[in-house]
Length: 286
Length: 287
Image (tube, rainbow over all chains, first blue to last red; front, top):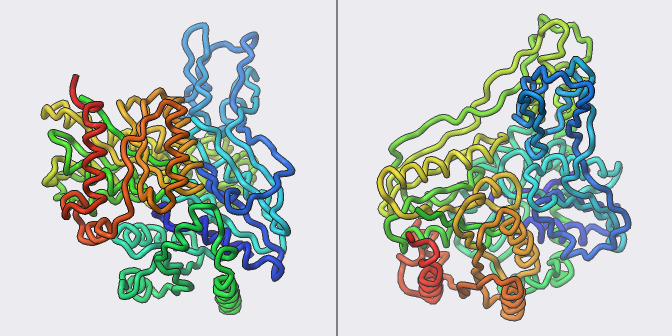
């Protein structure tokens, strides 16, 4: 089962929920935690894993053999990203713009373009006790997170509970991470910003056809903004965690809720059980 | 004209709240919301939209089922795994057009993609340029660049002296697009392990693009020890901690009422933000 944890708005508590769910489920299921927020991966600060393997993530970028190049300009014409410019006697390559689609090398009539890897990040694997841990890390100054996320997701094991921590937002890195999940947990907070971005997140997961449920973090008694929205949309609220300075201070030190306040472990296990039940029902109806 | 961009690395540290306060405190400025995925600044500034335009960017492959012979070449060659069972996934397609060029029966065409909208609005604090990227769209960096370009154009045409930009979280394409060429990056962090870790990465991005940075620690009293560590870390890098804002429930009430906290009374957070603004104001004043 693959559960992704997303939010739309940043800082609602994705990392705390992902790590707390992982810790609460250890011993009950084989747990794998994959940090897909490759721009700012934080799960490692909470799980303090031992990293045992590290592999670079490269995308193939063109390399021109000038002995063969006739400066015909076809490569520049086919490049949708303006990563190649051909001027008389020279070919200029802008590697940072290249998506690695391979069109230029395939279509070059002289066979003058080969490809070489350009490193844009790294995927690290290891473990935190019996939790399997994977994280991606985009190199500072690089713009494209998607290839790194794609590589992280190749590490998802079969027959485990794979928990994916997703970056904030609704654009391509978020979609890449959530796509093909069995369930998406959306973490929100009962503020106008939280609700506004929750709507966007719900729209995103619906377009991807992934069922979702909500965790309301920093819940304040009597503040029903998020609840009312969820009822209206028919989205289950699976957990509420109160606004609590004790939790905030634990979080600030990198301690999961499941470890700092073990009484919460059962609540996370119930969230998982409920997700499993919902998923079974969906498969039965399908 | 000077440009200030509010960034954080980590999401939810208070970028929008602080950018909204700067909107109220700064004189003679244009506002830009460059968090085009999840723009929230308008929730504090209550804009009236004056101009809405579509944002067309990139292309998506489209396979004509009747012409397709299912030879499989496109599926084999697509590096983005965007064609399965001779159908294009609009989420995975990166619009490179490779498939359309190699299809032996010309069954694939590239269609222009409407990727979102952008808006020019009036607010009581000055003009606001913002955008909304369509759900699951690419090219957020290009839309950010467009928002900034429009904000600068308004500033130049109408004689405003500054652009204040609310930036996106992270360090990837929309952040780079918000940051490059700005005069000052205001980095908002919080005294948590995640806040510190992500601040370090966004500082590196500022250095990479040679944009001067100043830091503010929001809710510093949640963990004063960690706040001091962050201050010390920044000071070792020669970065000024220009403000420390206490946790204050008046901020939540102000935001819930759709008002920048500095306009909602003079609680401890509001005065700290006013001081923060005074500390950086000179850096974005006209020469």
